[in-house]
Image 1 (spheres, helix red, strand yellow):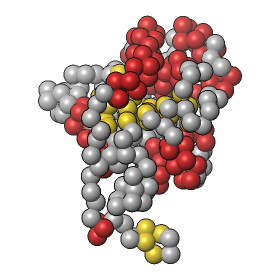
Image 2 (cartoon, helix red, strand yellow):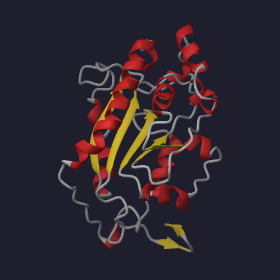
Image 3 (cartoon, rainbow, N blue to C red):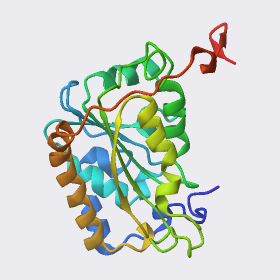
Length: 247
């Protein structure tokens, strides 16, 4: 489905007309952010790792604003998945190594069909593997924190029993929370922006400020939370493999 015709409840920010103020702000972005952004990372051991996954970032307003706001922020490393893997061929080893030193993992993406964009889902499938992220010997992420930062095309009312989605947005985020639990991570309360395509420049900038503020406060806040347990997965429930291919 084209990003110009987003699904009900999805995020059509790519289709939103850019206002003159937005265009001015975009022109002020670092050169790498003007098209497909890949902000220069801080050192590889940065405690905050942001995985950005927007399929059409060049025409985004919300995600671009958030990435611009954290550009050069100390202790923050950004990996733009669609810039790194335009062919969807994920370097699993590189992604797992990037995760090891991170304390706070941020998933930054718009909501697509009540979930994550395709490349983000593929990242989860391939990177959060048995023996690394879960299973009897998979404890690489245990004790880390996961923060979902997302936006929706639908309004807050749309995500209610009375709205056209018939459920609160928390219902659609259950797979995120359970993924965190299976990997032994804390699922930090998500940061959401509803009605992304209608948001004014001022609302988007306020949202970006909340994002930056959260990045500065969350690591310390998470330190005071109890360490999460990690769900046990029986060996017979783990995927088998045949010549290296899961079956």
